[in-house]
Length: 306
Image (cartoon, rainbow, N blue to C red; front, side):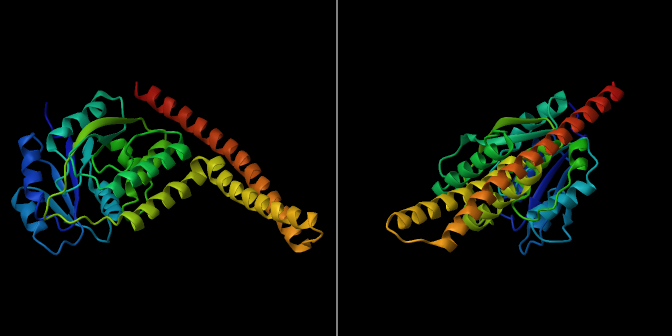
């Protein structure tokens, strides 16, 4: 099968220890259209990538998310496979990524690192953080995708041109997945192998800082996709706070002490909590209607293509 319709996208920043071998491995698998988006590397990443035959573009801004957004504007291939340049992924897994795209059964394919990972590939903190964020994503969007933060993904041209992306950092993976769900893209998860990081390839991810930012993105974007989850969580916090304050007020009242200001605060917290639930329900109805309209438009589009 010809692979001229596939662009291999590699966002890279100071990956001189691994980028050359990775490009060679993709060449050996039959993929020559390789685009390296360089994030202003201070080492020999660009030089090595160009020597190995890849097209290198230095991104105009900063951050992985900004690099991917800029790359998507440049790409016009039918299929795009995105992979990190740190040598933790195998080039031969690209065939597994591409199959659902070429079969027409998926618009986005996610490589599940947890299906087969090398000992030491994940630290305990990273593994726990991934699980927490995957659970949060599942509760927020109703899709349990095993590994929303993977750096090995595949897209159709229609999918990447439909994205409306704003995140500039490591939150980009979760944002792309959320945007796909919002636009009713077909998503498929496939097993891949995940390797231990090369000893000379330092991680750019801060588990705590970036993990918090990713979690914040998942929650923030739920406002437009699952407002019941977004407002319900806020409402739940208000109600719990009101109940705690209310228990204290009642206990004080039983002892003959009246806490008028705290009583008012308790009532306001509980009322605000229930109002948040009402906002969530109303917003959920609007989002459900929008989603149904999107499905109808997609069916009409597919019918016109046939």
